[in-house]
Image 1 (cartoon, helix red, strand yellow):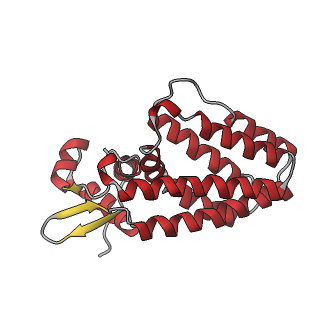
Image 2 (tube, rainbow, N blue to C red; image 1 turned 180 degrees about the horizontal axis):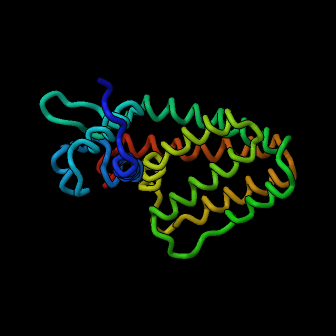
Amino acid sequence: MNAPEPSATSRLVRNDVYARLRDAILSCALAPGAQIHEQALAAQYKVSKSPIRDALLRLQEQGLVEVMPRKGYRVRPISVADAVEMYEMRDLLERACVARAIDHASDAQLRALDGFRSVPRGLDLPSWIAYNRRFHIAIAASCGSARLARSAVEVIEQFDRFTYMSLTTVPRREGLQRFVDEHTAIIDAIGRRDKRQAQALVRAHVASSRKRTLAAIANPAIVP
């Protein structure tokens, strides 16, 4: 006999647990290298171990979690090789998205990017990282290619913990405004439909983040 299909309620619980656990990993609330135990997570999320196990398997497939024999699971550590590979993918995908957005997006779509020119003062780090993610996803979504956008978004969504780590190397006195200024410069170049300048700015923006992330990996003591 075939196994019964999970109920709608069961699917909602499983998806909710997966989303919460993934967010915890990407925001570094669960730090790279942290050990994970099914029983502890089940107690924390007030669910059975079944949706926890299902979420961990999905996260393992995405390379965010790995199995530790006889020890449970752990958040996959971020290596230099992982970071370099991910930044290479991001550079290629985001420059391609910017080029296509300039060629294919409507004026109204490009004007919608103006909403990312500023952020409220005193924004906490998780909220700022969410703003940063939405900005890059908005550019991808305007590129006019569903497949390219989907690939770019998949990579961008995995960058929250790279962003978190990269910002640990930024002196508090500098704040986050200079990154908003970089976004604004990109928006201006896209608005002028200046493909060469927009792609150069995106490349520099990604490269500076890469440099900060590699510095954080080299000095793990600075990452809470």
